[in-house]
Image 1 (tube, helix red, strand yellow):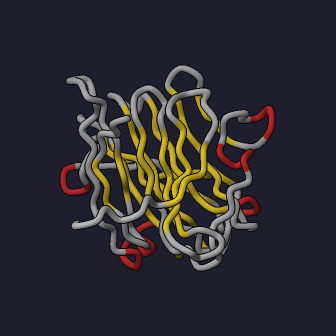
Image 2 (cartoon, one colour):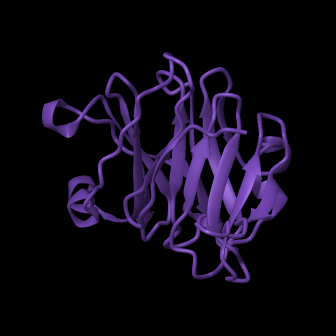
Length: 210
């Protein structure tokens, strides 16, 4: 299956985006954020940061606030250089559910935040997610609170994981990559569409001659 995506991976300022293969897909961009300068702007210390932007410039910046560990969202109507205001940051995931120093990475699909979300690590290193659908709102938690959230599957990351990558498609396909719990290499947890289970997979072997 093809996974059209643009991917940028780093530790303190990351984003990965997935655009639909049609003209209605969001044009999503990212700016690498200087963590110290950003922390000064919001009046606190931050951990991982990533941002997504729609084709109109509407922006969501997601970050971990320290020392609370809360994952926060800051909304800005466009690039900082020509925007006159931003929203007051608010909590998306309470810090008791988040690993201190967790990596965060996410995705956006469709125009005007039709779908967007992110992956992070829980305190027990279980890969977890939060996502928004324009039709049904916030999806987060375990069990009946979010039946299709990845945290229900219990995939565990390595204690040395300092980065994640994430991708998505318009039909609900998702991919999140990380360092495996046995530290043997990069692994992915994938699903092909909304309602499908997440499946664990290791990096395929290198093709001879490449």
